Amino acid sequence: MPMVDMKMEDGDDYVSGPSANPYGYGLCISLTEDQVEALGLKDNPPKPGSTVTIRAIAQVTSVTQDADVDQDGDGIDTTMRMQITAMEVTTGQTSPTSSSASLLYPSD
Image (cartoon, rainbow, N blue to C red):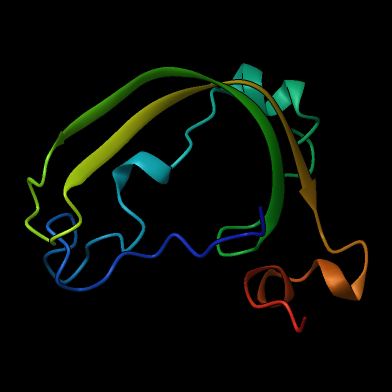
């Protein structure tokens, strides 16, 4: 499956207020000092605002399907939780095709 932009629409229930995160709380990853060190980023961490590439393996821990709670007309709302069990973080770009824009918007 191709890379998908996870930004939520302004009308979404999870996006509100002037400083709201347009990607939602569930897509933010926090790492402890030990995890930063395990990823090899302790001595030269990326600067805030920079872009990194993340490759991860996760185990699905729950899937919930409910009636059309958000009333968008699609019949069933599906949510899921995943626990990341392994991860790699790469800083910088390895090739011109690895830019965020080209991953999100492939030229076909």
